[in-house]
Amino acid sequence: MDLPLQLLQKGIKRGSILLSNSFEDIDHSKFFAIIGVYQDKIAGFFFINSRIHPIIESKSELFAMQYQLRKCDYDFLRYDSFLGANELQTRKVDALVKSMQDGQTSIVGELTENDLVAVLEVCRNSNLFTAKEKRQFFY
Image (cartoon, rainbow, N blue to C red; front, side, top):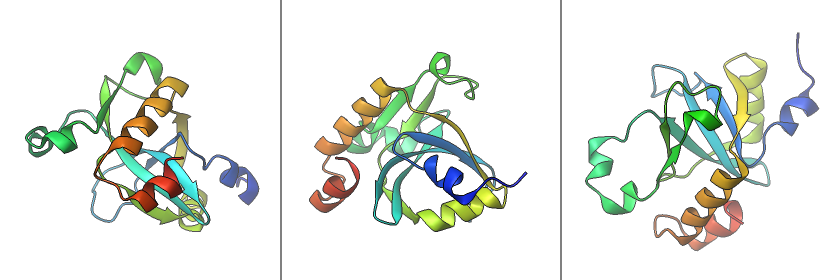
């Protein structure tokens, strides 16, 4: 059953967690969180990973942006995982909706209120993002 465009767009909001296999440079499906919506773009694509990559562990500023998500809070997780909030990626809302219509992407949940507030706070205080990115996507 095809979902109406407006219904798909309603699910695209701050805190939504999606599962997608539409990433060109990744050969498997990935969970990711949307952290901001600004005009016709979404931002975040903060990937959820089961472990922290050793390169990130060795760089304190990147390591500080790995936020733990507990399995008990998210039914779709198999184990405690990490939201990698160290790289802000954007994508047009239309492209995300199209991948949802094509069956490549689906909404699987939302960040808990506590997790969303905490991630936004660390993003607002991080030197990894510009003042413009912070204004557009984290407030």
